[in-house]
Image (cartoon, rainbow, N blue to C red; front, top):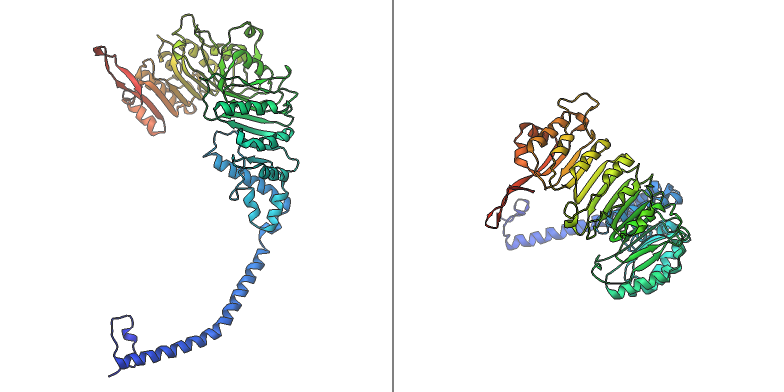
Length: 529
């Protein structure tokens, strides 16, 4: 008997008969006619629904808070958007640059700000400050740069550019706006041809940098020291760069000269880390920079009578001093620290570059740089002290410690030959139990981090005693201790030390090692992890 309904076999493998197939086809035709009738009723309703939805959205956009923002406020928001994006990419790719500059890409501000709506595009184009800085690509033509600069109006110009022959037109355009330069980064490579182009370009500039505030010149890769080339001289002075506050020269053979022996009244940060600067020249530069706060410098000794003309130089604003220096073949001290009085110094870092084997006590007659004299003379509020690649006499370190009540970080790589760390560790050991809540009798009560290098053995019991004594002092307890010439296992053998580690102390020690040495056994030493 033929079926009148197929609901119970829908979705199964049921095979209908010939008569059933004819009946099913008639059912399908009937349902399609009914669906067509429904569509004729629904389509106008759906169109009306879509139109109403669009009108609702269009009216809601009139209520958005962004429409109530004044153009001046939108312009200010745009400026912050550029700084935010620049900082984001500079932290990954261009983190060595002292400033962040926007890139001319449609996916980056300020260009992408004009792709949101017509009104915001007009605001972006009329906001001159958005176009006052740019990271200039090497494949960018002078026409694109000219359009960018025209949008900047009369604003000062900040930029980073590669100095090379392929950028000749761009460089000539920038040179024509030299009086508007503000923050400038110039970089180039080490080939002789490019260096000649750099020299010609810098010499073609005028000596007028009226608006210049930051200048960074560096080369990639930083080679050249082994090559013999003529120095490139850049003339700066109070008459040419009266507003200069940051000067970074990290390209070998780049030198500075002043038009007149007049001060840099605004200079606050100096970095000469690639080519060494003669100690006498450094003192002259500092003398001309009364407002300087940060100095990173690579010092070269030049034994002449000019050093003696510098009396004690007081720099009341200098807070961060990092010096790398060389020693001459006779072991003369090169560091000008004994010439400085730094009453505001908070961070001091000192290292010897180059001939480490000639540093005291290896060279006859050599003496240590006068860090001890500097500390005694200045009584600075020093927070961080770091001495690397140099054997600092333990007696000098112990002499300085009582004058450093604000010290928080203490990082010394080596002490003098024949010295050991024990006296320093004992000096930093607090009273047991603590005298009172004011930490009376505890040297450097704010000390949190201490790092002692891998040379010269240390008594692990003294290390443990130092940690434990200060762990009872509350504010004076350590957060990190690294004694790389001491066996870590010997210190951790004290159960109380493990308790300090459980309470947050980070401790690093060394491990024992030995090796064959001319048929015998080398004395047991400690190797840093």
